[in-house]
Image 1 (cartoon, rainbow, N blue to C red):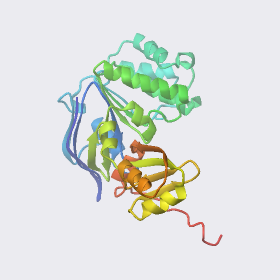
Image 2 (cartoon, rainbow, N blue to C red):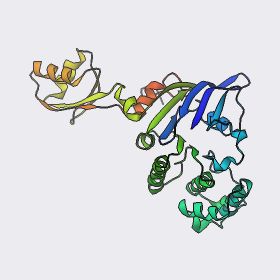
Image 3 (cartoon, one colour):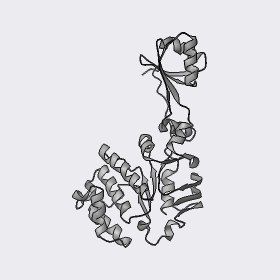
Image 4 (cartoon, rainbow, N blue to C red):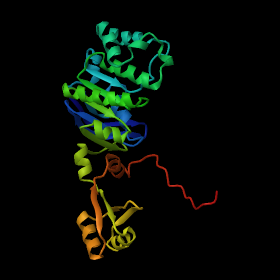
Length: 307
């Protein structure tokens, strides 16, 4: 199990991580979400002993990373797929990692085969695409057959087949009872890959829960299709509903329940053809949760301004 115990990390006057406190349990895939600058990568680096905490502690099975005798046998990680000596071949890169942690050489060929890059094992990594580098990074993380695995943006550069492969890979690791901690910006992928989600912003813990729990408690919308969408739009606005989309297919309404909309349509003599509650997506929940924690935000373009 991975435990983040009141972790704080400062770089001068900048607080990158601010009293984070949570656990990542074995047997589930845990997604780690947050806007740019939220402290996700810093947290990962502290877990792996690459940065030292200002306050607090991070433990893996009750020990800090620096206390692990052969760390690759207990923790595997992919933080930067391109952080490999470009002049080395994939096989020699993995052999060097194996030698440093008393891992048998035969394991190198096993992980090369498993990750699908055995055919390019003797090629220099300088010529690897991002997707191939990601697979090599995953091979390195698996090298010591560890019980805890950390991945930072692991699907970057992967094609659809590779994304499906890594999704199934995460599930198989969790099913084996391993601790799987995945940082990603891809909400759609986390929605189908992760069992638990941890959300942070500006270095602070925001919330934690399953995708179902997080989306069930969020404000959703209702899709409605009627005999007179224009008339219903006017009716709903007088009842403080927010109509986001008006077209021939129907309306997307927030702020009113299905019952409220059905009742309003009946009282106005409008025939309901379809009325379907829409649960908020993980992306919508994430945007709501982190709205006040975005360090670099854009603004809508004013299309009425002079060019």
